[in-house]
Length: 330
Image 1 (cartoon, rainbow, N blue to C red):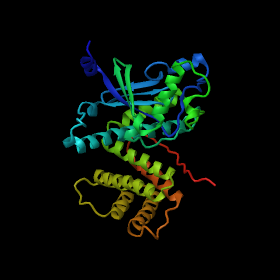
Image 2: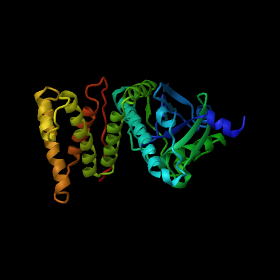
Image 3: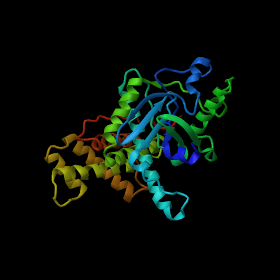
Image 4: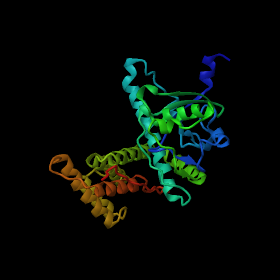
């Protein structure tokens, strides 16, 4: 079979990592030859897989997440054509929204599972991903974006090559200033994450909301508290509008403050939630209209993020939890 026909038969996935490397199932000693066998091949062994009409996804033993969104995979634009640049950028942005949402699901299930460490999600950027080709579910090609430096995908691929060449200390992770993963999530948590993602992936609006939440968390982690709160507010305001439209179809849309009060009157949200939303609305307005004078405390960002994630999945059978960590050190 020639290369062109083979390419047409392949399913292509994007591959990406969370904020830090982690193991799935058990801690792996990469200096142990038997355990290191899990890394041989195009990519490390799969720990869990799930596929349906919307997507195909897997999580490997080293935390590499693989994702193929079927409706996007069928309409790949020709990025080499300058006239399709805007289309290509929009297509990639939508694909990365799904990757961000999948990470939010992994983080949530790692927190909820008592047998797992807490895994931190991050924002997946176009220069962080790798591309994996699969034929009948078996990895048969890979490409990594080396021109953007030592991303986690690149370093993990170097680790695989190092193991294949009969590993001797030190590993590429230590050489490049990364750290060997010491955290792991259970197989159960990984399976639950993909199951939760399978529910969310059916709704592009929820996917977009949760991707914004991933960006808000990333801004918080980088101590950009103003941006974190504003990104969370995007989700809050959009969710309030969606809940209002669902509760009062055809009714003229009032102000955000009035919609919040309406949702409380209709029993859609609690009194506590109403007061919290009004408080965050005033803070967001101050940030937009008086950005220099307004201080945005970190705990307000966490509050906004938690409210946003609850509203984003309201009226569904999903419960998501999140962890907010800042890089401030003394």
